[in-house]
Length: 99
Image 1 (cartoon, rainbow, N blue to C red):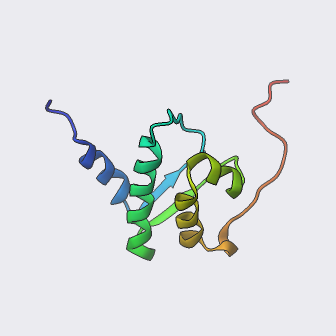
Image 2: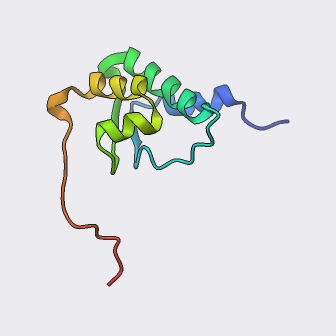
């Protein structure tokens, strides 16, 4: 009752000058659309602010896989924010694999 509202929680992700969204697409999605909607709100607001709000995205998924997971609208916002020339594909062995 005296805790943070959802709007206040979203503002904490929308307003910082730098936001890092790590491992995008790994979040638990229950099928309700709630996670996708909140991601769209955060990314959409940061997209609208332009260069004043830098955002770094990491994911183990390709853009196509990510779009299937979190939605095409969100992925297009990411591409528009980053620019196709600033999307870096890193390949290599999975360092999390136990010997």
